[in-house]
Length: 106
Image (cartoon, rainbow, N blue to C red; front, side, top):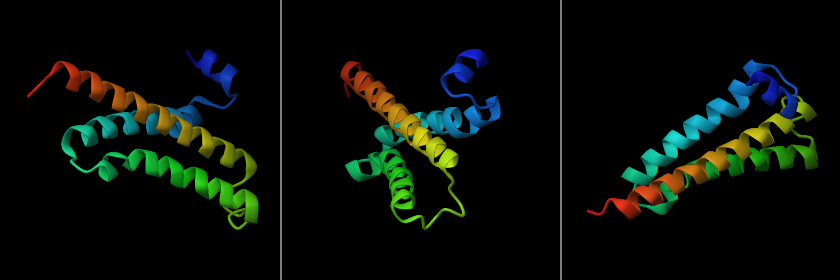
């Protein structure tokens, strides 16, 4: 499995877990919980908002260079990947919630 991941993005397994897999899993679990418990749509969109904030910070850094001491080019690329994994997991969470809601009626 590691060879497949390493061929996609050539970093170590620890970076894959820390920047991609763990945020994706947490976003998926969080999205399913939020969809099931929250009433307001703004609360249900918290994982999407987190991904938007990450991308916004990377874009601000690219335009102004204000966070260059914290975010380098490679770290910015990893953060954009993290945001994409969060968005993808959030979408999967919404799909799971929709399928469950379709088949389980109260």
